[in-house]
Length: 120
Image 1 (tube, rainbow, N blue to C red):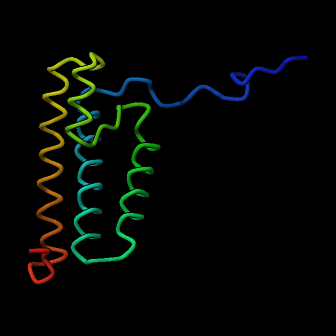
Image 2 (image 1 turned 180 degrees about the vertical axis):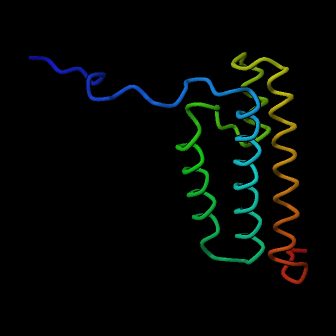
């Protein structure tokens, strides 16, 4: 008897394509988490900052990568647009969501770490 790998995986209870607004909210929240982790890790001069950044990126991609694309980086969104994987209108909306999430994370990082431990 042959068992195929497809037989071990059950259907997901989550929808394959989330609502449009939910996709952009997830992009904004994911970008917020990534920028906040990078800012706090590097701003506090922790020797394991890269490990934290990699861990949060891995968790974010595993949590939402399959359903939303999980770009979290405008350069990845640009590459996906140039390759024809997403239309330009969706890319522009992703960029706005990433910009909003990144700016909020920058403000939260400044409030958390403060100016005294700035790298400049």
